[in-house]
Image 1 (tube, rainbow, N blue to C red):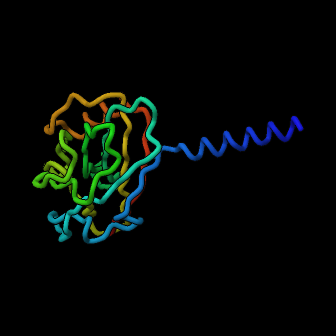
Image 2 (image 1 turned 180 degrees about the vertical axis):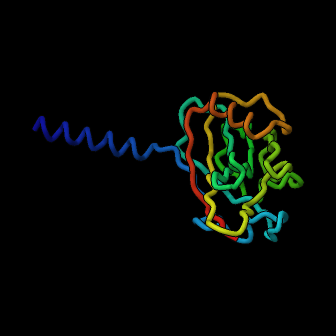
Length: 178
């Protein structure tokens, strides 16, 4: 009997641990970037629409969120930052489709969409050079506080600050090829 109770407790704990995993999802992307997400410029002719993103099972103590899209395969020696949006309020668990367009009021109030490696603010979609498939890592960060940074902050400095305040993070991958 004692052995059965211990086994049942262990199973409950394992189930609880899996049920509480900080998770990032998207209704718009399912692996391969489409023309909708692709950049419009730099030789690409996409619609440059940021994907819908949502997250669940937020770590305790989260005070704000940030989302980044990073291409580690870019032939720059340091990758390429496609989107950095931060100071997302702790009660927000979704970015709607095209929230990365800074000319529209789709993103939550008070967020900062800083400069990307395209030299523009907001979302800049995939636009890999011809050749192999690129992997675009989309990450949501649960943070202990807001970032004291503005929209002109470079991606490297934003990344440094994110990693100083991170409570948890969740990622999905989008692939792109031209």
